[in-house]
Amino acid sequence: MHNPSKLALVERLRAVVGDAGIITEEQAQASYTRDWLGKWQGSTPAVVRPATTSELAAVLQVCNLTHTPVITQGGNTGMSGGATPDASGEQVILSTVRMNRIREIDPVNNTITVDAGVLLASVQDAARDAKRFFPLSLGAEGSCTVGGNLATNAGGVAVLRYGNMRDLVLGLEVVLPDGRIWHGLKGLRKDNTGYDLRNLFVGSEGTLGVITGAVLKLFSQPQSRVTAWVGAHDLKSLIDLLSRLRDRAGERLVAFEMMSSASLTLVLKHVAQTRLPTSSQHHFYALIELADTLDSGLSAIFEQVLGDALADGSLAEAVLSSNEAQRSSFWKLREGISQAQVREGTAIKHDIALPISALASFEKEAEVAVRATLSGGIAAVQIVNFGHLGDGNLHYNVLLPSGLPSEQIKLATSRLNRVVHDLVANHNGSISAEHGIGQLRRDELRKYKSSLEIDLMMRIKRAFDPNQLMNPGILL
Image 1 (cartoon, rainbow, N blue to C red):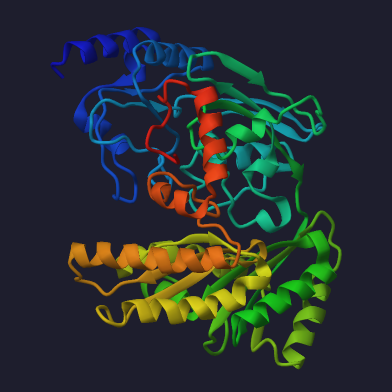
Image 2: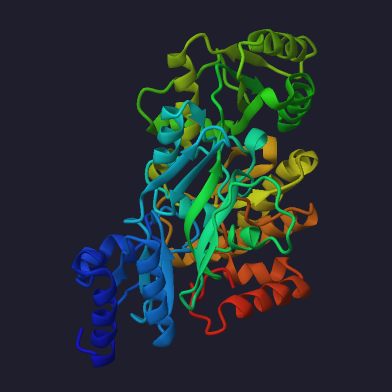
């Protein structure tokens, strides 16, 4: 690094965080400048890793005074390129990984207060140690951070019962772009004193400020849990089953995960020690879980509802887990889909949300449209359709044949994104359910948001970040 201004910047940042808090060697920066999917690669004069909120505030003061753009990064596990710098070498990476304290657990108020850099799995463990339960659960929980979960409003497999990350947070501590600190760490479930600043920052993808701490909701630990694996002829049958279970089980219905036959076939092919739970193959499968704080007859609920669905032919087959090992084997199939896709080849991915009542018609329309779109140039694509059926979130992915040239992949991606997302819009859905916009969907956002919505978002952005330094090129 020979640029005098960059050298001066780095030394000012080093004075704030010390040698342990700054990385300037390119090789040591590699895990920060490249996203884990390998889709985005950038460069930076420094990876800055403050250990406290006051250090982070001082870092942002330096960057604001020097007009240095900042990319905020948690566990670097995002799916949309929202934490990767560009290739200019001008953007400082601000990592929260050293901010990893569990600040307080209040079992009476059912809250836990943590630093933004705490791993999601660590929050789950700390809650469990206090005989409480934190419900957010997703594939990257051993490496993603609370700050990243909040910045993208993460979802996961328990949204049906407990909601997204926005529903699980009560208070925030945030450092603004000029270094001022908003001390909003309140564990209140009622606070009717004006604009909801907390919810502006949740889902803002680091474009308004840096979340440094959070008060999260805790819950009573489930004492009983029953899991079922079912096979169905079509998606509509699973949606009908979801309605029946909601009516019968209420809030005890925790998860309702859907997988297409193509999704499961990939898992059985690529993930070791997996097997089909049912005696034969079906077009669609669901992994369903009931849980309660009491042992209150969950098996009986399942037996009645699944029995009725089998009797009237809307379900083809159903298996109840008989022990924890079998339950884990069910979840291994669901959790192995992303890994199996990577091993199989290149997938064009869509993280979409639709009204549950529109899912069945969307699925049929999308398959016809996708195959028609690619029929002239690419044959034998696999539609890998899975997701959180209970909250209308589909991961609608199209797996391309191996060996395609990069230009053909790029063209197919552009065409399929337009086809799928236009259909989503026609059904009043969203082009991003839980992965955020990042760099991946930034340009598409303007097509699917109204000009008024974009204008209001830009006004908020300018109010909080007038110098446009926070996560430039991300989201907006």
